[in-house]
Image (cartoon, one colour):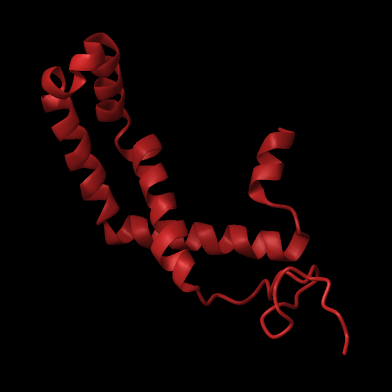
Amino acid sequence: MATNTGVLRSEIGGGPHGLGDPDDRTLRKVELEVLIPEKIRQKSRTEKCTEVVKAFTECGKAAGLLVVVKCRRENDAMKACLSRWYHDEDLKIQCTEEYLNERNEFRRTGVSRKKIQQAH
């Protein structure tokens, strides 16, 4: 019985670094329900709703402990924007493609995107 030195079981492992087939585009449940939605939330916050997030953040800094009362309008605007983009099918497709491309690169090279960002 050979030992598998990769991260994944031999049945699903493979690829140049034992991390899976780089060309496999199937998604696991955790990727569909956790990782891709997190990517959508992050992109919504940092690219789509930047102005309302900034307004809520500034209001919160000024309001302190009264943020719930004093920043209701900003919070409602932020939640509405984030919800709109979270349910946008085009953004979901875009984030899924980005995720699959990042996973492909990781499986091909063995270097995570976080390590690449830390190096720069």
